[in-house]
Length: 185
Image 1 (cartoon, rainbow, N blue to C red):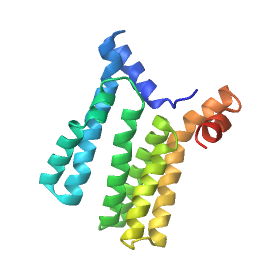
Image 2 (image 1 turned 135 degrees about the vertical axis):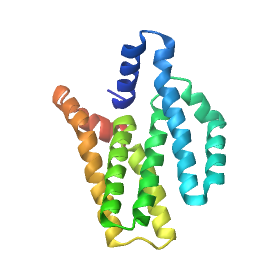
Image 3 (image 1 turned 120 degrees about the vertical axis):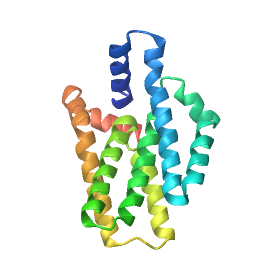
Image 4 (image 1 turned 180 degrees about the vertical axis):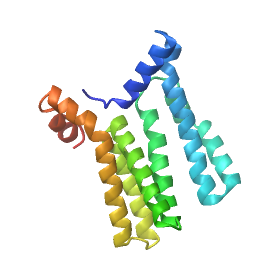
């Protein structure tokens, strides 16, 4: 009950596909580590250019903690790609030239934030909120429209994440209080 379900689902899928062995248990962490490396590089690519994107991905891949976490079956490694992709799509929403493109990016942010909630609770939402909020404040881009897009992304995230959390509350009454109040606060 202490950990959300996403990483456990990936491990169960891997074990059912590849059998009960150590490699199958470790595969989801490795894949999430690779996705984290790629998403880190992609953010840098979009913000700073192709060369720095490749360098950023290489630096991430050779950093001790991410490399170590990708080799062990822990939930933490799965949080990084969802945070990176959420930030990337907020960035893209700010630069979209059409309303449809902007809202598609906001929907993607919501999905990735929802996946971060299913991976690690509210930690991903907090990280994205602090990083993107700080960026908006420093660059003086905080507007009502941006706040509305952020609220819409949170609504999508709630839809994505709530199904499992509500099922847990139904199965174990008091779970929501335990997980979100006692564990988070």
